[in-house]
Amino acid sequence: MSETNRQWLLHARPVGMVKESDFELRTSPMPKPGDGQVLVRTRWLAFEPAMRGWMVDRPNYIPPVGIGEVMRGMAVGEVVESNLDGYAPGDRVSGMLGWQEWALGDGALRKLPEGTDPRLALSVLGLTGITAYFGLLEVGQLKEGDVVVISGAAGATGSVAGQIAKRKGCRVVGIAGGAEKCSWLTDKAGFDAAIDYKNEDVGARLSELCPDGIDVFFDNVGGPILDEVLARIARGARVVICGAISRYNEEEAPPGPRNYYRIVAQRARMEGFVVIDFLARAAEAAAELTKWVAEGSIVWEADVQKGFENAPRTLQRLYTGANFGKQLLEL
Image (cartoon, rainbow, N blue to C red):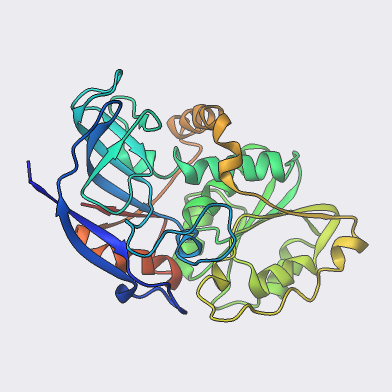
């Protein structure tokens, strides 16, 4: 084993788009596991749009990453040394191991069943799938026959959310950027329709595809797309705010939606949620999602970059729309 540990540390609070200079690559001594700990060799890193918010020192649902601290992030790795009952060398585990080649973990790490694809563990069966599952079914109170619109629909969370809605007997319209992503939504993921926000009039297409209004909107984007949807919500609609990637790298907060009063007129509800509130029920979601993947009724894509040195550039892909599916890095 190596005697050193490469780590990406947060070097500066980002202003505007995340930059490579916001991080610092440092070599540290190899960590040694204490009692109740395991030493894990990181194999895969996962990237979430929410990571931009973790880097900023302002009120959030979890404390920000400190300057000089290892960048926070989910990962899959292999146990190399164990001082923890129930964990043995060779076990594959997932958890918040951070951007480092070697990490210490404890009983909070989730052991992966034998043969589990790490890409699947970090996407559909990880935080991504759990977010889609509870955001749609619990927060969105999905019902059979609902007209459902998903923004960021070709992303890791949006694509799973849309496929869950199809399984539950809903009509599903996805909004994504580019013809390739939109074709994947309809041809592979089974969406009823897709709108290319880069090349189509989103409002006009929503009116055409949802003439009687939108019952559930699962929003990953915010901004003008949220405004266009609010103008077309049905009576009793549920607007689920999962994310707002369109504004994460803005230096100043953009104006709020102009059409928010439609929530009053249509007796609708708009609610935000954070997946950590549902982690106690993660096994429930994982069991259902595992079954659906095995049946072939949920398909998924992973955008895999390679090389630990490319972690900052891989994160940037989320905010430029370069990724297709779950953004991952193989070390």
